[in-house]
Amino acid sequence: MYRALLLALTAAATWPVIPPAVIHPWAPPATPYGPGHRGVDLAAPQGTPVRAAAAGRVTFAGQVAGQGVLTITLPGTTSPPLRTTYEPVRALVKEGAEVAAGQVVATAADTPSHCPDGCLHWGLLRGDIYLNPLLLLHRGAPSRLLPVVGVAEPG
Image 1 (tube, rainbow, N blue to C red):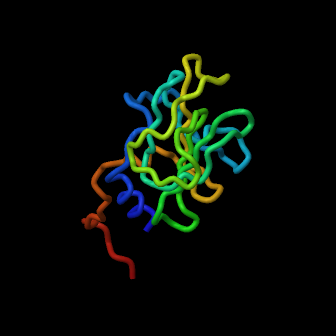
Image 2 (image 1 turned 90 degrees about the horizontal axis):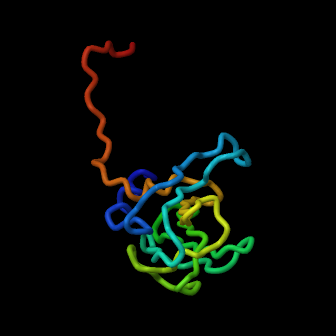
Image 3 (image 1 turned 30 degrees about the horizontal axis):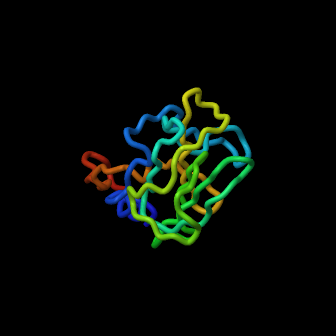
């Protein structure tokens, strides 16, 4: 079910910055509080337009630990729903706004960063579990089970 949902979302999903350049990939932690990279960093100098990766409702637009953060909750997703996050940004939309995939919703902000030329940290969460946001862009054919040939059936 979860995979089918992601496949449905990918039809309209888009990169948050254009052109996309991943400078720090997804690296999930081994434990909930362990080290890792809970998202993807995309090259984005200050002022770069930031687009909504998927349609949804803005559920947070404000400051967290001195950085601008934008959260968009995706409708019709699992319970708890999927959310995309973008930071550091200067939001151009307000909480409660409905946004379309590809709509410019923010600009990349110039804050101290681990990226020398500036970057956008793009995250995907389901509840408090971080997922790889690149899953939203997967446009491959759906998985299919193929017959197994030459294997004895059990029993």
